[in-house]
Amino acid sequence: MERLQKYLAECGVSSRRKAEELITSGAVMVNDVIVTELGTKVSANDVVKVNNVIVDKEEHVYYVLNKPVGYITSVKDEKNRPTILDLFEENDKKYRIYPVGRLDYDTAGVLLVTNDGAFSNKLTKANYEVEKEYVARVEGLVTKLEVLDLKRGVTLKTGYKTKPCNAKVVSSDKRNNTTLLNIIIHEGKNHQVRLMCDAIGHPVKKLTRVRVGNITLEGIPKGCYRRLKIHEVKEIMGR
Image (cartoon, rainbow, N blue to C red; front, side, top):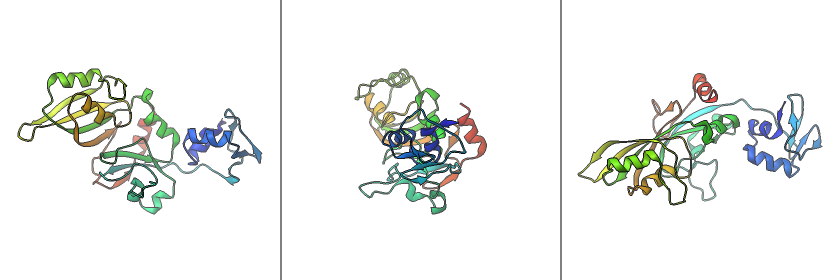
């Protein structure tokens, strides 16, 4: 037995939060009876319908995409800009996949894509502390004290103070007055790394996420993707 909203998320109907909205709005039926109570549990023998259409659990799939700059991290865009789904083959999109978390339009790198709500939840909840590693080319020459500020946590312009993280200078380019930083965080606030760099006075010129948990870009050309291996999924789900 499992909660109805979790079942709907695992069927690929929607996120768990959206599933809760579907339930409370009366759009969900269990064994032809409308259910609006969020605590309702269902089993494999129950017939679940959303808007009078039967939903079943799909095969779970997991991909890592090397996202290029210039793509929206979404399944659709009202402005008709390219989305990350435009990079996937039709045979893979049939699973109703969606991105886990977000990468900005002008940020590249590791983006996980799945139809497994539980997997997505593991990666997006801060309390699971999944590492996200970034390489940032920033304006100006970053000092040791500024790196220390990043490590201790900085207050963003939104008012949020970041948690302690790992940060270091990879290289400094005095001729072009830029610095290459490596930053590893456990959080996932919107535009967080960019805002962190702004907070120490060094705006980001170029940003790439090179790792999420145990998943890297190794062997994946820009704009391409691969399926995750079973042990990669299990390592994340085992946290």
